[in-house]
Image 1 (cartoon, rainbow, N blue to C red):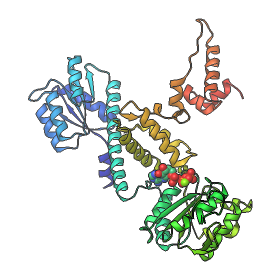
Image 2 (cartoon, rainbow, N blue to C red):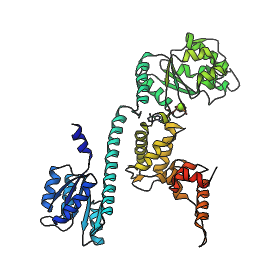
Image 3 (cartoon, protein in one colour):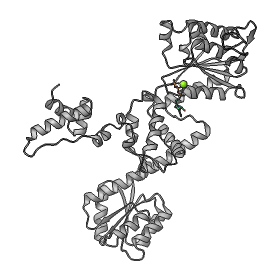
Length: 456
Ligand SMILES: Nc1ncnc2c1ncn2[C@@H]1O[C@H](COP(=O)(O)OP(=O)(O)OP(=O)(O)O)[C@@H](O)[C@H]1O
Ligand SMILES: [Mg+2]
């Protein structure tokens, strides 16, 4: 079984050529590169193999008996649309090449070609194919996920969050969501509400940091007519509006202490009064609170009442930062790319492998929101089939972006190599903001060599 799985992953290349010596030479080269190789002496035979075997790449001669290369590969493509094709001919003309490429061939080699050239072209073709297959798989996976929830993530850390949601949602208990900015706290609050028995009642949201405290008080608890200047009529508060449903209190640590006391009372006995009112009202409201601050610290600094903290912290769900669940980055990135492609009506097929690597190695201080913004921007900027490193903001594009942006230096003929070297190193260091590792990478030398040239 394990052998079989392994064999499935090694690309299978079909060589079609009527010249036996050439066929054998090609097969030898490719086998040495660890590919699996099959060969056929004419077009018909090759087509028969394509029908039978999962051919990943067809390397075919143009002039062959029974079926020429052009007809063969077009027929082959209808059988295996994902098969890559490289055509070879001794009579290479631009016309033939262009028409072959239009018909879906990946590449064109004019005989005689160098072994190294062949190997390189084959590798490129297979890489492109692997990328396409991976993108297709991810977009299917995303489609599947999207059908169930709008929440993307399959890392153990994220699954743990979803498990906690499963447990907490139906219970009706107060939930405290913690986690850095942009980790998805609001999204989880939505999910908890939708999974609860209150799902058919309102989910009312309020951001405690967005309003000055007198306004926040009347927003939360409502006010009576004439309660304060400008209170022209009676107004129900969010607690009343959320009756029977859920109230989401965002940025809870920013609430003024006086209001915290009032909130505590609602949580303890379910009662409150409107601002300027005497009538005691009852609230049947489930509370979900969120904060991106460290609440223990907010308590010890006196910003958050300790008794309120314990009331809110019945069930704590912590959203891990993106850098601690990097497995989710490709999924999220593809999800956002697909979403913004639709919105921007762009013909983008995916994210290139290099770019995905850059995305996966970034630290994402702004978490999922930052990733979403970066992808949106990239989709807007992108001009190619695949989102590339150039479409990323400079701090993310790293080495790739740097080489593109590099300023040039001018030397007069006769400048000593030592001097040129020194200057190039200095300028590169300046460009990288003094980052020696990055500078060494760009220059293609080891960090040690760099240190020797420019002692710190
Ligand atoms: N797992 C996820 N799947 C899909 N989209 C996500 C996910 N997590 C977050 N997002 C998206 O990232 C953005 C930020 O999420 P959200 O507003 O829930 O973060 P937050 O934790 O409330 O941030 P803040 O503390 O800054 O308010 C939103 O656009 C949200 O849709
Ligand atoms: Mg939020």
